[in-house]
Length: 148
Image (cartoon, rainbow, N blue to C red; front, top):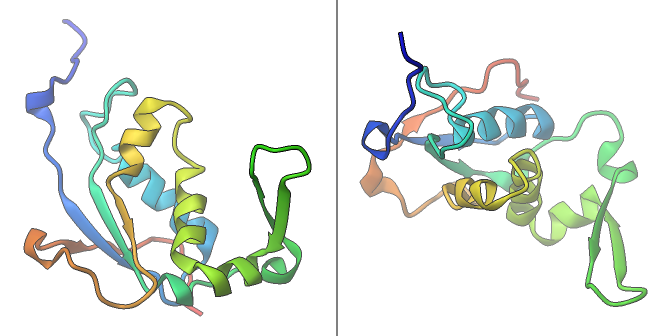
């Protein structure tokens, strides 16, 4: 018996929509990263992008547990000496909630060109609307993520 290795013809991509209102950031991000990577499929191969498309709406209404919103920091560096900027998650969510959620999810993907390709299938919107209705996405229920 030979090992099954998927080909590009074996890839069947679905579209999912996640309503992030009241969901915990980390629990939601791990599940979405798993879907983007394709680990939920029986044909998963670590060397291929087997994942599905995910649309996240209501990113501005996401929840962080305990005092993480005020205590946990988000760091970014401009590339120049002394170019480190830091802000709390609360400041980052107030400024650009979609980017904060996107960075949390893409940080859980592989750090190579395959991970960057997987990240292109993620669409994050701060509000409740999205322009991907033509793809007729299915609602994805995140197990274990509480709604506060």
